[in-house]
Image 1: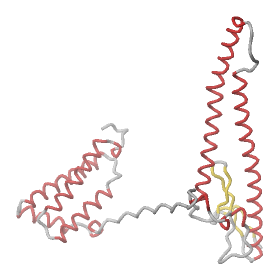
Image 2: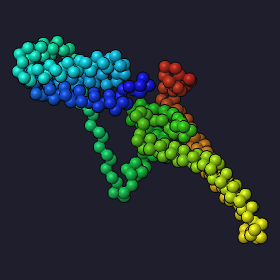
Image 3: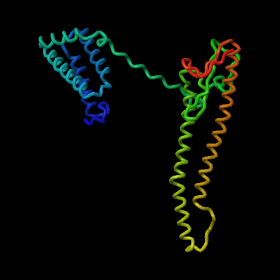
Image 4: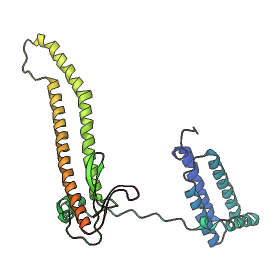
Length: 283
């Protein structure tokens, strides 16, 4: 296997590792062992594979495969009621560390999908108005300790960071805005590097065939349409910048009002991280 290829991305390595894992579990189920020993050995196999799943060293992988194949041979020997093989396997199970024979952690269940809204829209599209941050903030009264939000930026898109974890609705809005901005940028690059040169070539061709036609039906040029599309793309981008600037001013007013409330309560406001604050505002 080439050194630049990670073992976990190699098909041959994955097939060999999965086959060894299945052979060990199958041999553990059919081995003539007490139920308690069989359970301990199964847990040890599962935990050991979980620990070694990120190994990339060929030397360590060779040792792990060698140990696995030797264990398969011992399981096969215990299946045939071989007394020596069963005693060897029993001694091996007795020497296993307690942390290796514990039951492996269970996987967390996947979160259930949100229930569909009666209107057919996405549940995050129909949130109640009382959860609209920019419309309802600042709160004059809160339950518990008041937290001052902070203005953050996601690749140039401003938003208010209220608490962690980040709400799913906010993540969805940011993702949609980023997708639209990236799509608009790709369209602009395509206009400049593909459609505009192609339109100029069409105009040059029209100039060549114009003497043969002896007349021209209109004065519209292909490049003019591309320039107009590029101009419209820029107008939409400038409009978004103006909208973001207004949004930032609205967010800043919310932060200032919340800060004033906290100072009136007699508490200080820390700008930046708590361990390395940029500024501390005291009442």
